[in-house]
Length: 338
Picture 1 (cartoon, rainbow, N blue to C red):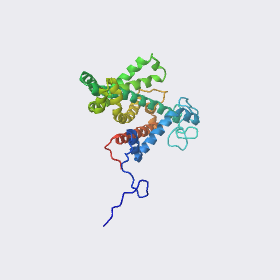
Picture 2 (cartoon, rainbow, N blue to C red):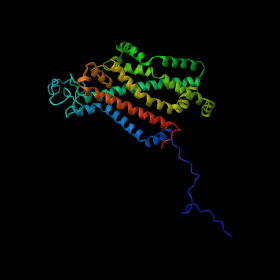
Picture 3 (cartoon, rainbow, N blue to C red):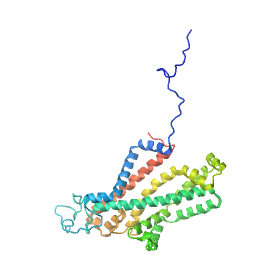
């Protein structure tokens, strides 16, 4: 007769590992980071975005290392050689060299590397601040519409429809000069702050409606959840529930939208500066550099002057878009990564 073996004593070599140990819980951001690390495209786009951000932040340091600044003109024959550079297919001193790492602007001789670095600082500052304004307005108004409902929801929803109905580019083009004239006599209208402040206000104020609609839809389902009912039963105020219970639970959606809105605002700033209603010379931005290349018809005789800011703009927008896609997939609980 076969004897039954007694279970192994705890601590012995034959003891099976315990299966009752609870699985380690991960936060939403930890899970998202784990998924991002598994994607080579996501990691590459993240590295490019970080490099571009550091390039803009360290613009003064990099400019000092190159020995040039973005504002000083240099029309000496050694820099601008009257379009008679022997042996070169393009006129002028425009190619990277030891003294000018990306060459110089044709006509004025300003250093392209310094202007590109400081231009990135201006362009990214406008894009990030305008995105922050849109995210705050869209999150708060969308959450308020979904949570309170009734007349509050009706008024905010009609505002969303109104903002989404306007032709965005035409509205921004027409209102930006008006806002700049209004801000000229205020502290925001001093020096180079005027075009930057006007673009942040315009792009931020007219970019919140789509996010508000998304947040409203999420909050409509969240307001009936058990944790909201529990907060009400403990006597929490509406504002406390809204900012401590509701909004933290939609931050995944908000984060995804923000990462997608940043490249949109970078492109919008470049377009407005290119059209002459944004950042103006001598303040550098990538859109202003494109405008300078087009205004003087330098793109015909000196395509390098157009290619440098154009390539930087394309790489930046592409990297942010790829990173936004990766963040969206990482925060989606149904996304599968192989």
